[in-house]
Length: 438
Image (cartoon, rainbow, N blue to C red; front, side, top):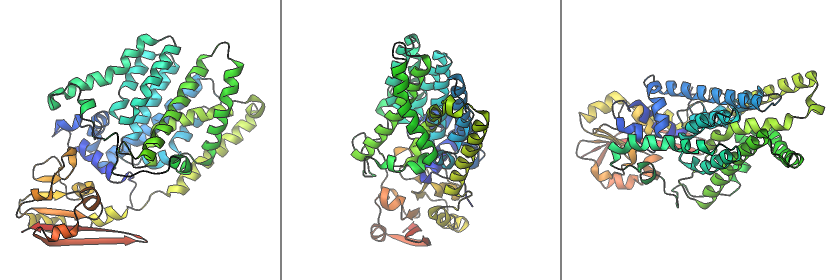
């Protein structure tokens, strides 16, 4: 049984963190996300479950900050923000991973919380590290600037660059480039190898993101906001300013991801997990729908609704994912590899592989010159790098699609098959083959 989600990316982020103390360049690796790696590295020494524990804590803390912000805004049911955050389907699934979204969600809602208590300097410093967790979050910074301007706190705006400036200097010795955060970013902004899809893909996937209860509350909150703005049009309150910021962050994130997926740009793969970042904001803003004293003023009504909401959120999340879930087909297949036999065949020669979980199964260090993962650290290597006696681990997912290495190419390149493992489930199959170069 396995509680790890996130596919291949979750193992790659774990590997960056696990070997960061041995290879300090991992701490400033763009793909690995420097701020995530910094916090995950100590936990990674305990294994992948250590990083999962960190992400679970990030998810819970995100909910707590959402609740604290709701309380500061004077919301009833502020405690429900914790439940809405942790048990939103995409978050409930995603925190059992070593992905970067949970820590990004925590930074975002923590920054918003400190804005709500008018600690604009600390809030801006926290938010300045967002771009070092999720590249696409750069779209938020103009919104933060507008909010600071509206709050007459533009003097705190320079602190939004704190994380960028700090890490620019930290990474300078590794890249010989002070602007490495910009120049070394690994994503092509105009194209994606993952294709494209319908613009409303994420909207259609709402049940995987927040499901019906939160969807209804979010919609009611959005419809309620214009009436509040109109009634207080002569002087916008601090509460309304923060609500506008929260909604602007949610809407901009939704449309940005929808647009790049529709366009087929920015390495977008249409993955719903990216929306973990704004789940605490959605949980917070959805509570606005419940701020009707005529309906929810009675304590009995409050109690019944609270219990019902908690039961619905927990049951929906648990039913949807039915934890603990079985390991996916690829992981189950790679676990079949006989490491002891492979080590004997290898006899000190180089090991090449594509799937990141292979490094975990074979206890291989992707940074090691003798244990090379193609594409790790952005190093695009060729199968021609494999020398006589080296072991090449081919798989039908990463090697075939991302490495563009076919079995026909293997057959024509002088390799001997030494291990083969395959699994199938319904209409999906997966194969991993170990070859030795002759």
